[in-house]
Image (cartoon, rainbow, N blue to C red):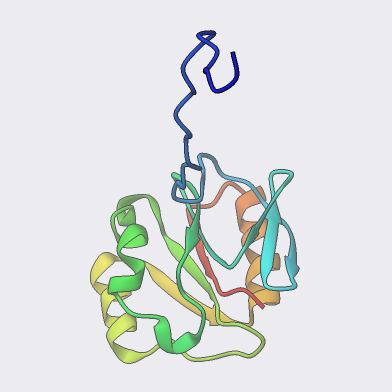
Length: 140
């Protein structure tokens, strides 16, 4: 019987890994930051994040130069639920560029830029106070 295949069962198709957009569907304080990422809700994420009323999203922005109205479309889509947005600009304070300041003003959102560490701490305090806060945090 050499050379015959066993009629037991057909091979199963190989399934690939399903890649989904990084998203935590809830509000949560940021427990830790550094080493290129963040920890929140008992999970960790490598890279920058957006903390919005609808949840926490992985955000494909790495430097303050990447901050544009287009990279914040997800945030502006929830503008009606946000009063203040904290921008964690990395290791140092980087002012909000004029086009982005104008987009925040048009959306009725106050934007404050600060180093990521300060933005994380301020976000956690405002979140604990149940304020309408969002955060755009660059990984450090």
